[in-house]
Length: 145
Image (cartoon, rainbow, N blue to C red; front, side, top):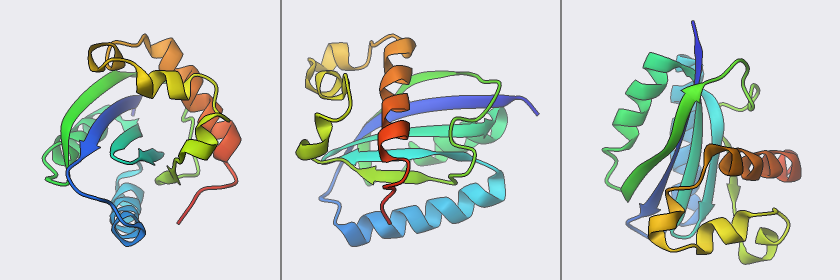
């Protein structure tokens, strides 16, 4: 099995209450555990950014199902690539609901989200990886739900 990472962004079609998010996470975690997928989901109303790690075929199949979900739109792959090890080995789906207050804690994150939409999806993977690594370090012990 070769490990693979896929990162995508999307925009929510509805207001996501904490109960909606909890339900989404519960189902995702159960499914991901069965499929040996790990990763992280960040939500900054109305944006999602998700990292999926696992076997390439399984990650791609899961993403194809996710992209059909009517709760979000403008689903765009930021990058996908082979990896040698998981960044989130113990998280079937880590989660953080990002607020304006904690945006300043993550270097590069506010710049990433405030760029024009054309630039938003053309960031080099290194920049995105650095930002996600910052989230992993800052919020590792604060995973909500």
